[in-house]
Amino acid sequence: MMSDVASQTPFPIARGLRGRCPCCGEGKLFEGFLRLRARCDHCGLDYSFADAGDGPAVFVILIGGFIVVFAALITEILYQPPYWLHAALWLPLILIVTLAPLRPIKGLLIALQFHHEAAEGRLEKRGGD
Ligand SMILES: [Zn+2]
Image 1 (cartoon, rainbow, N blue to C red):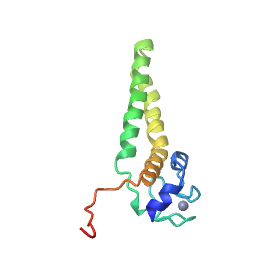
Image 2 (image 1 turned 120 degrees about the vertical axis):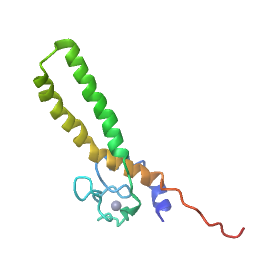
Image 3 (image 1 turned 90 degrees about the vertical axis):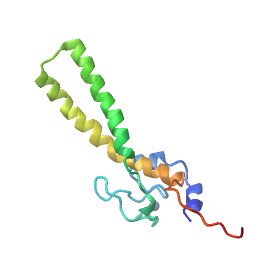
């Protein structure tokens, strides 16, 4: 049972950020850059429960957008550089602040989903009454 395993594991932030299995912390979570494996190659946990959805992209857009826009505004106010310098500065920064945190954030959200047993709502059949 997932609930038994999840209640025994410590809070899994480090495992998620490292892209490791949220259950055992040993097996790899990702197959490609963002594609999940079918199951953990160490403990066999089925990753079919994992669905981060748009969550990683939303966090990356909000945090990365703030960093780049804030840096561009401060630079413009203080130095008024030419537009080609803005492009040379902020286009690489956009790639860095969007691509670098995407995988750790996706791993973190999946680890938190596993830890808190979060899933889509389902109708539950009551037994006995
Ligand atoms: Zn595992």
